[in-house]
Amino acid sequence: MSRVRKVLVGIWPLKAVYHMVRTKWMSFLSVASPELLSRLRFLVARGRLPDLRTPVTFDEKLLWLNLHWRHPLKVECGDKYTMRGYVERLGLGHLLPRLYGVFESADAIDFGALPEQFVLKCTHGAKANVFCRKKSDLHMSEARRNLAEWMATDHSRLLGELHYAAMKPRIICEELLEDGTGEFPTDYKVYCFSGRPDWVLCCFDRRPNGNASFALVDENWTSAGFLREELTAQRDVPRPAALDEMLSACETLAAPFPFVRVDFYSIRGRAVLGEMTFTPDACIDNDITDFAQLEIGRRIDLPTPYTA
Image 1 (cartoon, rainbow, N blue to C red):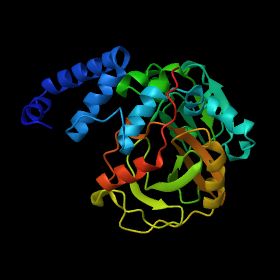
Image 2: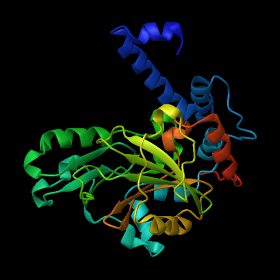
Image 3: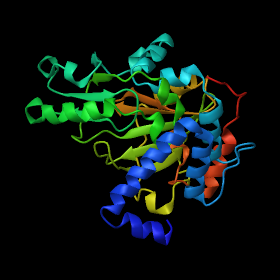
């Protein structure tokens, strides 16, 4: 961040003005020129322009896929509700969490008809969840306000993730996953390349819609050494009992895609599918090393462009 920018964003109300202008400018570019937006975001993050003609790194290839491989399956599987149909067609419906309801708006939710524990998810984006462990502790009006705001958000216009533009916003209510610890269960994010699961990013000590601790391992549960040192967990993460089931499912779920990250939980020995992600970190991952950028990028075989 430049010295001038640091000064501007540190002064109120200039900080608010800066973020408003930045958001509106990025929203405009996401429609007017997604490629220019991608180049500018990469320049700010990396200090150079990306090579989108012959991409090499993980970030460059993700940006290329976002711009040039706009297959309708990305929309179906990136949507947390329609993904369920894809999974069921492949005979893997047993991996899905229990579904309690689907709603077109926050006002349509009948909290009285829901079980004691549940999670409400907006299906067309990320970090838009309401977790309920006990209904008497849930602030329902606040939950409705948050859900309504998230439902009105077009995630394709935040950071240029184009497949979100074709998704119909919905809210789903699913079972609240519990692993017996009383905390949010560890999230196992499997990096898949044309149906080959190679690495697992483990996210534990998780907070609602927030941060976590991380470890990145290969399929043999050996540290890949890809995370920046300050982010690498200082303790070992146990191999989940359901790992073999997760990796086997990934071979089927990820087969059509040059790259997809398939997210699972291991709940009392059972693999439970969370979501499928095509643009992790909006295609610019600041948490991995330069070596990892090259090594992960090497795994992605770019397909023939597919225009939506």
